[in-house]
Length: 91
Image (cartoon, rainbow, N blue to C red; front, side):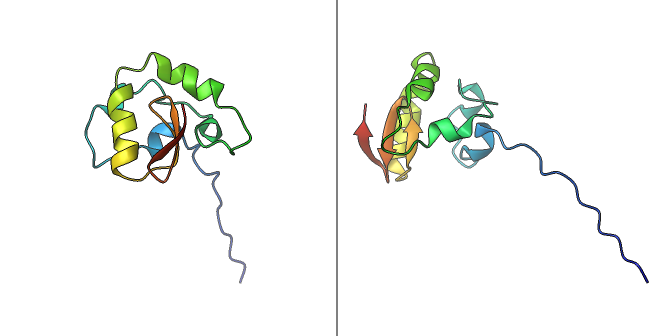
């Protein structure tokens, strides 16, 4: 008996998929919504985050995004700043 397992390519993850679904602070309006370059939002300490900061600059939910990062101990770029476990480490 031959058993074939079908494999499908995983759907491409966008940054919106990483945003919190339980916190309805207008994430649907986030400037980063749909951005497939999610690695830019979680830079290594030696990397710049100019790309993410530029996208965040015009975001309508920038302030609440940064507040969310602080309140929920997030890491990565939130609201145009880099956080490590909820503490802002780079502006």
